[in-house]
Image (tube, rainbow, N blue to C red):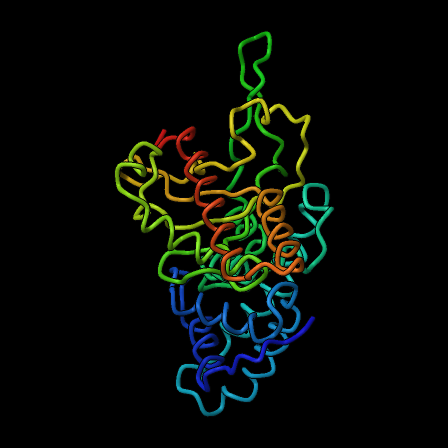
Length: 303
C-alpha cells in the first residue's frame, strides 16, 4: 500500500473523532469527506487497519485538549466496535459471498463510513458488544438487487438466502463526491457527464441526477450462468429496487464491478499504448454514463 502525497488538514482527525464521539449515526457529508481524505492519504483501498490505528492513537493524544473529546468513552467504544467487532464479523458473515475479494478490493473508504454510521445508530449504549455488532450487521446488509424468486408448488415464495444480502461499496455519495481509489477519476467524470446530459435523454432513460443519493458497486462475483443474467442489461447495473424515497423514486444506483474493471483495464491499456490519458478518461466516462442510462431505462425511475 502506497500513501498519497495529499496533505491532511490539521483538524481533520479531530473532526473525525468528534463525529464518532458525539454523533448518533446521522449521515454527515463532512465526516464522509474526511474519512475519504484520510483513506486517500493512507493509500486508498485496503487501508482500514491503518485508519483504525491512526484514529486510536490520535484519540489518546487529542482527548486531554479537545472539548469534543473531553469525555471520549463513546469514541473509544465505537472505534473498538467498528475495527475489532463489525469489520471482522462482516467479513466472516460474507466469507462465501465475498470470498474472492482481498482486503484492497473490498475495503472502500465510503463503505467504512457506512460501517461507522451503522454502529453509531446503535447508541448511546454500546456496552452489549454482541447486540451492537449484530444490529449494525443487519443494518449494513441492505442490498439484494434483482433476483428471480422461485415459487413452490404450494404457491409460497422462497425467501433469499440470508447471507445474500450485503452492503455494496459506495463509489459516490451526493454531497460527498467520488470515493478515493482506482475508480475515482472515472466515477467523478461520469457524474459530471450525467449532470450535463440533455433532459430529454434523461427522461427517456428514467434517470434524474437529482435522485442519485448514492452510486455503488456490486462486489459480488460475476456468475454468467446465474438466472439474473437472463434479464436484459442486468450486467450494466440497476437502480436498487429497495432504496425508494417517499415519492416513489429509486435513490441508489448499483454498478457491476465487472464493467468497471473492464473499463479501467481498457483505460490502462490505451494509455500504455501512448493514448492521451485525458482523452481516454473522457471516452471511458462517456461509455460508463451510457451504460448507466441503458440500465436505468430497464429499471425505471421507481417500482
